[in-house]
Length: 132
Ligand SMILES: [Zn+2]
Ligand SMILES: [Zn+2]
Image 1 (cartoon, helix red, strand yellow):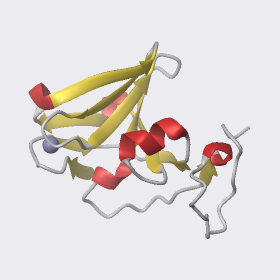
Image 2 (cartoon, protein in one colour; image 1 turned 60 degrees about the horizontal axis):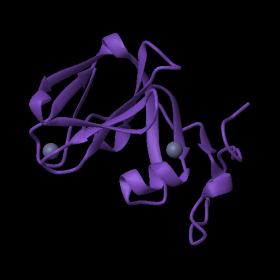
Image 3 (cartoon, protein in one colour; image 1 turned 90 degrees about the vertical axis):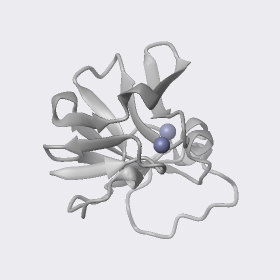
Image 4 (cartoon, helix red, strand yellow; image 1 turned 90 degrees about the horizontal axis):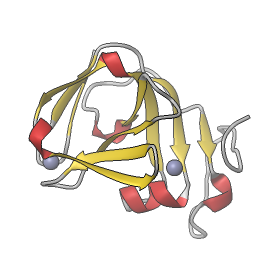
């Protein structure tokens, strides 16, 4: 069981299952959305993700058709994304989780579009875009 929240604390959520396939995504969309070198996202079954509070503040932005990012409209924290192409799961921005996370990132993805000032200094596998 994991608990997380946005920066202002209005949105709170709980994850009851495991967090799978944690990746650091360096694509330009994730960089813009986080204001950072990359986003660290994990896959969680939609049924395992439960909003505890702040649902009215959860705003939706669709950078492309069938793909939506959800964030706190008060403080701007990115929380999850959903894709119509991957039904049944949400991708959680795991930096918003407060609990101790036992799973670990498994790869860097979209390294082909990483920021030119960023140097990846760990030994995780790197992929130009999606992992094969
Ligand atoms: Zn907030
Ligand atoms: Zn990305």
